[in-house]
Each structure stands twice: as structure tokens, then as C-alpha cells.
Image (tube, rainbow, N blue to C red):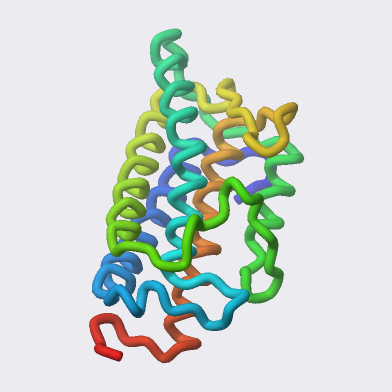
Amino acid sequence: MSPYSTHTAEFFDGLTADLATLRDITQRRFRPLTDDQLNRRPSPSKWSVGQCLEHLNIVGGHYLPTITRKLKQAQERGTKPAATVKHGIIGTKMTEAMRTPASEKSTTAPQRYAPSGSRLPRTVVEVFLRQLDELEGLLQQARKVNANAIRIPNPIIPLLWPRLPDVVELLVVHLKRHVAQAEKVLETRGITPGQTA
């Protein structure tokens, strides 16, 4: 994708396709896991599959309600979609940094986004799937308004208000990063979904 502008339909089609892939991986690889498999960590310093998903659930819990509210406001104003979505320089840099796989460059999540525990219930997978559905619905709504005019506050850097296209792209890239990390956990531990330990 162009770092500054992309055709609106192409942009949202790409993100929606990414979400479909993530949903397939989650249903096929994470949903069948036992409690032990979901919570098994490759090492004391690494997250389990469940912790990867809970981290994503926490981040989604911060962003999705704000995006929902901002989209509703745009719909009430009656804004029309632009032909292209525009990306800001800071948003582009943040997204590109997130594209580096967690296995190559680990980062420390801010405490407010860190998983709450080491023993998580299997409902963490269902919550994650619901958030994927919710984000997909928001992408559908974003197609019908001028997404470029919507600014979303960054919860970590309060003075930073990137455009909606930058935020949703960053969210999807972040999802892909941690789902790949969770898949790596399964490969590292030789876990086959549904297999008893």
C-alpha cells in the first residue's frame, strides 16, 4: 500500500481480507486448544497463546469503542467517502515498525495492555473472535464516511490524533503480529490443536 494514499475500496478490502485470514487461523488453530495448551508458555519470559490473544483483546477494548463513537458522529454529520484514504507520516511510521515480526524484534507492551494473568480461560479465544467481527463491522461503516476526516486519540501519546485509516491499519498489523507470535508458540512447543499433553 502507498504510504500516503490508497484507493478507499482497495484499502478496506485488504484489511477485511486480513481479518478473514486471522479469523480462519483462530478458529482452526486456537479454538481447539485445551486449557493447558492455551496457557503453555515457551519460556518464563514469553507469552502463551492465551496471553497473546488477551493482549489483543485489551488493545481492542481501548480502541474499538472510540472508533465506534467517532464513526457514529461522522454518520450523523453525513460525511461522504473520499476516493482515496490518506495516511499521515507518523501513522505510516508506526505501522511499518509494527510490521517487524515479534520474533525478530520484541517490544514491551505498556502495563495497561499486558495480559492480566498466566492462567487464562478459553473464553479469551471467543472474545478475540468477537472483536475480529466487531472490527470488520467498523471497517464496513468506515467505507461509507470520509475516514480521512476522523481522528482517533492515541491512548499512549495523548497529543497524537492519527487519522482513522492509520489507526485501523495499525490495529490489523498489530493483530497479525501477535497472531503470528501465538502460532510460533504452537510450533515451538510442538502443539497440535486438540492433542492431549
